[in-house]
Image 1: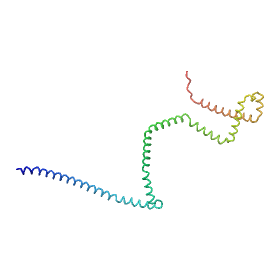
Image 2: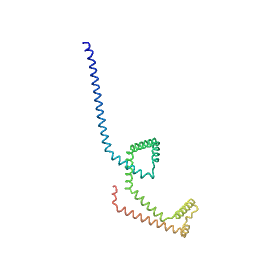
Image 3: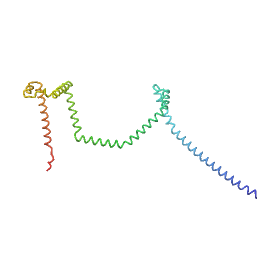
Image 4: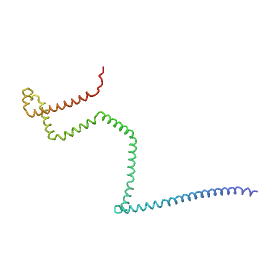
Length: 224
């Protein structure tokens, strides 16, 4: 009886070890099955990709053959080494680009509001006639440039300076009627007066056109 009682725990331990061994064998069998399936997947994938990779290889060989007069293997190796040496610099550049991108993304609403405000102001200026006036002024300057020579501007500047000098010395000016009549005998004075009168006539014609346009409008009634 003692021998039978002693053998019972030993058989139980043996059964436990056999169960553990069977479990490990099952686990290994499942792992082998997974490996077999993965190998089959890779085999099928490599078989499917083989024509594509072969085409890419032939295309690369063809292009490298065309580029051989311009690029050598040594050039590619040198470029690769230089690229590796510049990896840290490229990383810093990418970081700066990411920073700029984040900044632009943060400023995007502000830039949008500024753009909308600018468009509104430009539209308001267009309705008020600023741009039409600038176009007319530009055309006027073009006509002045085409009709007035630099020598004319120089003579005009000298004449203006002379007039200003005489204006500072009022005691030297003869403002009597006889003095003015003597000035009228000067051909330059008469020419200047004629030009002044022509200018006044042009201003009068412009004022008449403005008055005609104003009278043609439906003006609001005056307040009682």
